[in-house]
Length: 282
Image 1 (cartoon, rainbow, N blue to C red):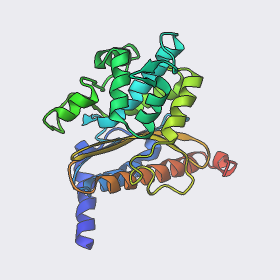
Image 2 (image 1 turned 180 degrees about the vertical axis):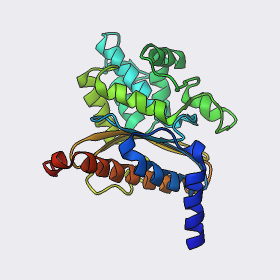
Image 3 (image 1 turned 90 degrees about the vertical axis):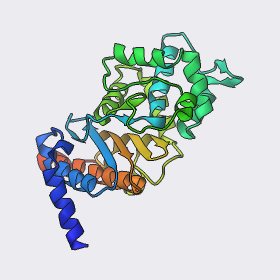
């Protein structure tokens, strides 16, 4: 066991391509994440951004991973943007069901049929891709609907329908900042993401009880992912993206990485701003 731990430690510090430029105050967290990734049996990508300070950390942050159902965040955000521009309404009926109900099914229960109904109504993958490009989001590709994706021969290294961890965090940051959707739409999207019922053994699993999380999971054979927002005890919020491909410990790895990110960002704030953290809300 001790030999295995030492081996993982060596891998973490010798596998330099796994590490990406992180904020200086998060070097310790980057090292810990490198250790966790090196000890995983699969291919893991991580990105996290403090929405208050702008500090970032990433491991394999520019490596494309299949989005699977995490793409549903972009689809929901685009529909809400259309609502804001008066082109659509949440009360619109699509396939005999209101858009509001479809969006809830898509984000809370990861319903694939609901997703494809909304996506078709919006104009298909090219519409979402064009919207992302218009909003300067690069590193995300949306090529197929969910039914097409699931019917296709599985290739977890296919560049289609993929995102890098850093690109996904960039999308989350722009959604949260109000640059892509307004405050009311943002609140509605976060509310639905806070009710996500899938992947309870991933991002949420090892976080302290009561931690506020808004997220969306993605799953394919051989792939587990979880993206969204984590709120720290001082109310700072972290946008995160976790992708795990291959291996047999993907949900557990995501849970461990999420806890490391939670602890690392909280510790970095206390170290950098000790006076401020002393007065932070519990």
